[in-house]
Amino acid sequence: MQVGAERVHSELHHVLSRGEFRHERSLLEELLDRLPGLDSEHVTLIGDVLRWTLVILLGVAVALLALRLARALVASRATPVGAARAQDIAPEARIAELLARARAARGSGDLRLALRLYLLALLHAFGGSGDLEYRPTWTHRELLRRGRPSPAARALLEDLIRELEAKEFGRASIDGGDLDRLEALLERRREVLAGASA
Image (cartoon, rainbow, N blue to C red; front, side):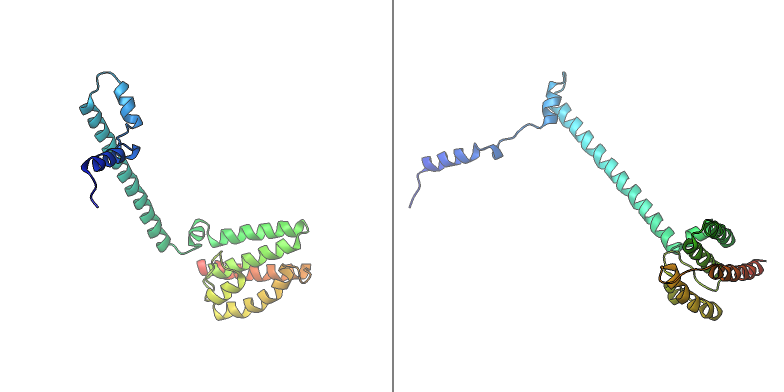
């Protein structure tokens, strides 16, 4: 079956006259046409300058972000988790802060909070003396499992944490004797810590 040239020409004209084959002017082109004294060469030049300016700015922004990411990555590899805080606050200062907060909580009658703070101060003391690798994101049990405690630290802390967990989470009652015992243990560890740093 042959199709006549006239019909092909008519169909081709119909297809090419659709909107997707027509060049539509952009908003920028229309705006630049309204400015006096600009011809098509100037518009093209301005468009090229704008395009290259944006490409350069984007390249600089990507380079700066990559540099910041690289610095953050190097810093995170150089400093283990929790070590940044440990460098900012000396162990003895952090222990003294926790001890003051524990005593204040005990004075206000919040024995559960006091227990938690005394235990946290004790763990910091073991970490400060090198008997335990202390990381603030680890639970008490993780500290015993992953913190490489010394034999003396493990012997004391395993039983103590097991006993105090029930009290800390409300399954058993807390009395003043628990807090007195923790404070005494903490004071002994602070003496060890002071002797090690002297």
